Image (tube, rainbow, N blue to C red; front, side):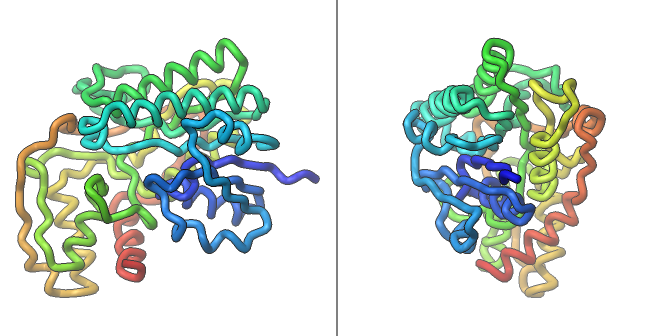
Length: 323
């Protein structure tokens, strides 16, 4: 029987490399496309000895690279993007090129290669200035950053490719994903790995604002589960749509720091006395984010395995061993 082939774009990044590992372990053949702008060889080098794994170094902004990567693949899991709201505010042109032009290239390549389904990383930033909580998929506001615009345009393009060309698409609106392999370094590091690294170095984490902003922090294994459900669903009502990909609970930044201190203090008691600093709110940040996961539960059978606290314990353990 022919192996199922999956193309994972951005497969050397945080989420992509975890997806590569998961699907290889499940016996799939995996092609990883990455230009290593934000991904790392170290995330995937242990996969090179697996005969079912192929790395293509290329850029989604190059249509030919996309066509080569998608050839013979049954499914595309499109993770490649330039993340970070602040990065998009500083450099909207590159963010647009990668997240919109690159996305369109991948849709065209997937359509032409007649892949079965195109599953892509959408974003909770699409909810913009909508103050409705919890966030439900059919109610969004105005985008608050160039990044948010690009991720909303992705959804619009996916919808057009479904209705016009018959390409099956599913968008997964990720809510503040965290976990093993998320990079704690660089100007645009996500808050959890950054704070973990700072605590481990006995440095003072800086919270933007008073710490009462809240997020639906979502552990990587819940995201892997959603990608697999989206790929394998045979429910016709479950395709050509978008889903919140989250745990369905919210945590303030103050609560997050408290939990991190508590968990990390088991490794080093000095961390308990590290002082937290506060800076100004960040441009483009929404105050609160909380997902309704009812749609994913109903149509995909989603049941998140890890709460935020359980995920934090796993993530901290990984960082302690690997940083």
